[in-house]
View 1 (cartoon, rainbow, N blue to C red):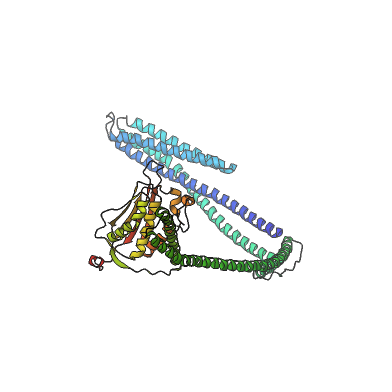
View 2: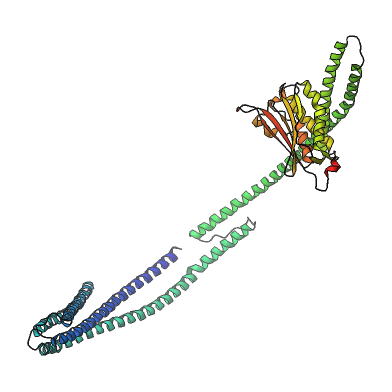
Length: 531
């Protein structure tokens, strides 16, 4: 690997060096070519501007010798300035190129050209002074023509020679660039061929064995990936690749050991999962049995207690009718029995209804009836309870003409329970109000009181079964199933039930409002059918 890397580095370095030398030579010749072309263009510019100067000088010669400043004379002066600017640029370009030269011979040659350019400029300066004198003579045209002829005789040959030298320099630079390009191509092709032969030789000497060993490692890795962890590679040699192959074999052995442990752990985990699954199934079975026993308990308790309680209530009613001695004592005792029996009877009825609601055994007997009639029934049935607690039970106006399609008996029991809750949690002297109104496609029936209210943190739980809240420690607060049963009944009718309450801690009036929303009957069910 080190030898291959060294050869690659050597070939790359040699190629880079050759390329740098070739580019340097090409750059030098291109600079020579560009500089020669620039100077040639400047010489052409000088020639053209001297021609313009001569033409303007001849035009000025035909004007009177002492005339004011004319366009021809002004143009001659401007042409002279431009010619001198062109000479200055040419000298600057020549000086810049000489500064980049290295060889003494080239410096001497360019210095000779600089002297030629300086002589040409001096000749033009002499011409300009002679033209100025000629324009002041008696015959300016003749004097100016003579000055120009003398200048042309001495200026044309050096200018042509300078231009020819620059053309020769540019052509020589161009030929040098072509020769360098062809030489670079030949040496590049030779270098490519040599590198190819060297690569082939190195491959046959070193690369083939290296590639075969790498292929063996790749095949072994693929076999391990397919699950054959017993795969190993043959280690031959003491180089870096052999060391890597030995480490590969150790890794494969380590993977094989881990695979064995993993299989054992997987079997153990499967056994644990099966055991936990069996325990979970047993726990589910026990929970189902407990739930079934709970339902059966509610049902059995309801059925077992309903009949004797009914008999007790009948006996109480019979006992209270006749007039006997010590009537006050007997009547007081019977009233206590009657109150307790009725309370227990209501609890048993609630337990029975909640058990039936969980099993889904109750079917609704729907019929169309007026909401006002329902509220009248509730007020009539719950009025004695309200009077006994020192409360006033009222039905607000506004329910006339509203009808619902529902099970009247279940709704009556629902609102009986809601009114009983309101009476239970309201102090004497307050009132409990029942009201109904229409909102959109729904009938809203409300039971509103001014009792103790429900704390805000307990409101989300009021419809949970057997939840009694902070008031559950007081006697007579119920079993926590009344609101749960009411919600179940309203849900079965396709309605909604909501509760709002305030304890008065924030300064507002305390109280609770339970709103039951039931859908209006379909359009084809008429009010006359309800009436």
